[in-house]
Amino acid sequence: MALYINGILIIEDSFDAVGMTVTNDGTKTTFLGKTGDYNRIGDAGATAHALNSEDDLMVSGELEVKGTTHFDGLVQVIANLAFRGDANYLLFGATDDGTMHYQISDSDARCMVLTVDESDDSGNNVPAWVFGEQTNLLSADLGLLDEVVQPHLVTVENSGKYAGVSNATSVAAAIRLTTATAGTFTNAVVGDLVRVTAGTNATVGWYFVDAVVDQYSVDLDRNWCSGAVSGGVCVACHKLAMMTPKAIYLPIYDAAPADSDIDINMDGAMALEVTQANGRLYWRANNGWHYVDASAGLSLPKEERIDPDGNKFELGDTVELMIDRINDDGSFHAMPYRSNNGT
Image (cartoon, rainbow, N blue to C red; front, side, top):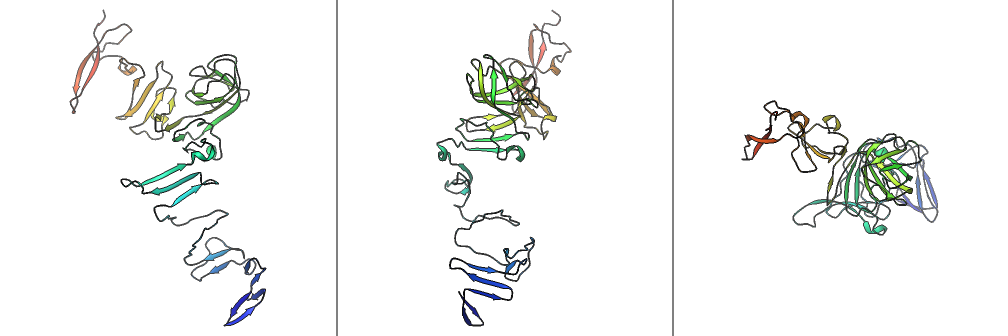
């Protein structure tokens, strides 16, 4: 190797000066400092991260790299991480299956774009972004999006998926789903989602728990099979919400939702309640919960079973509506009255 010291050219295979050894084996050149000491380029500061090995390097000034840079370990960024330019990507996966980038191709918009390469695995890689608690989602096969083809934004309750079995059975076409795995439905509650994906006579689809029988069995909202089932494959999870290009899926409750059911008691919350005969859509407005029934007709909450005149509504009563308020926008509000008082 060649090394200049005080203007003198020294040609050797190795060099040792003031504790630093420089060697070359014909393939690589190695700069090695004292054992236990880190290496520093520049003199503007010292390590703030406990560098303590001759294999460690600190650059006290700016560093410029023109080519590809490889990080085979953890990368920690204390200040900001900036991606300059309009065509920069964050790439994920062994073959860049997922990307995040800022794009300006649309002259009318500036967009942060998230993509998944659906073609990488014969079209099975549905674009899905799932938000939830790390312990229950990291490296977990959710089993929820089998056969889904549209992009999904999914939020999963913190406990996430709590069951995934391939031994679900039924003795005939029925709503009851039974597994041979102890504790499968110990933590199940009414309104949980069950996704059936396979099984003899099983009907692939989404179901919700209508009743918890025991740790082995639940009753679903409808028949989940056309006959006796063996080897049924399903997953179960607590509440989740999804948004797709074609629909918004709300979390399901087993009773009228209350402020204690949601994290923030703020107007604008919406939920579905499934235990009533026809189901109800609830929303929170003016600091209270309101609903509409799934089927047409006049529905009144139990608090309004007595009309403004003090008459209690009973089965068979005739109901009249009396306008009691004209709203600012010209619409009106009507209150029901019992018209056959005592007759």
